[in-house]
Length: 371
Length: 126
Image (cartoon, rainbow over all chains, first blue to last red):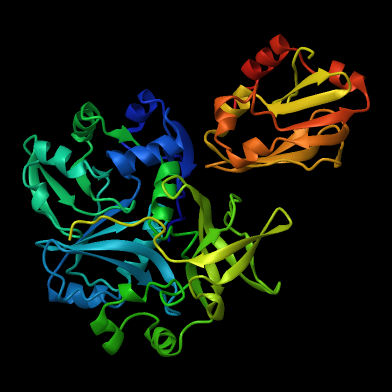
């Protein structure tokens, strides 16, 4: 047995120097030095994504490719509760890796490819994810975490018009589908998807060509967007952030993500944690993820305690910020299920003082996906 | 109104008789980024030198605003609580945080001058 080698060195994406030249402020994130914001700041970056288009370097995320025959589907369906058997080539689904208790090991996007699947994994989870998935793989299943590829998200209402000029044909992609395209004599994989609530694309491109793509985007007034605005955009869109809104102790029913478990799989099961989830699907969970709107301007950040109007502690906030497009504070958190109805009055304890708020519908900001 | 004096916690103070006006510096707003929430103290509240007196939040994080000087609050600036973004626009002018009746002018005198503060910021980049 060899000893475990731990690599502590901070990692950088292929665009690190490019970000630096764009005036990025960096923060350590999941072992990477990542831009939190650029010169414009979070609010302007957020608004320009919603009104024009922005690009995000999300190359820290894992691009995990799997190849194999029919048995690969059986293997993956043991840990992923999506209907992979009926997933068409070039179609994507939002799903998760589940543990034996039905807890979410990671949330992910899985796309059927010609030869198998591509799974996009969260940066902080990717190594453990691969370990978890590998338990179910057979010798004839090939897998690769491809670090030679960058991943660029282009998001916002002008994305389609701008990308179509560079990569003809992307207009034809529908939300949560993808395809191969040619760019600079190389293959690109583009999906119509994202994490902002806007129309847009995620582009998997070789590290060698990524700067050229960004040059083009910038020449079309697409702004660079950091992790700061990525967080305010996704929260307004009601989307979960793993490690905050989701973790291994939270299951998809509690996370209000039962829609992401395929109908067929809900009936038949056969995946990690099925017994637990079957029971939760039938009887509901004790707590559930909800949207929260503070009444005033106060921001209820992560770990803010939530109280009922008669002062009983009923839950906690998992994400909270100021939503620039909503022009008000927004939050998500978990409350006891009996308090989860939209419109329920709650109290949020911020700096020792209680402020009023309401359970709100999600998303806070209406999406405009192309279906 | 006296010349502005500055604290290491990035507040400014100006003095008019025994009433001081306190705000956060332009440098502080640049570090904070977009300000989206402000809480100012109510009149009558006693504050100690370097004691927590107000709260400012940007899209990134919440920060306490300390009073560089002790005294009793006479007024919190409600206008910035209603329009937190105005602190980014005019931090050292209309967007002051609070006024207080001071006890010890020596506390004011011991703060940094504009030149000293600029030098301090240069030597302590964050």
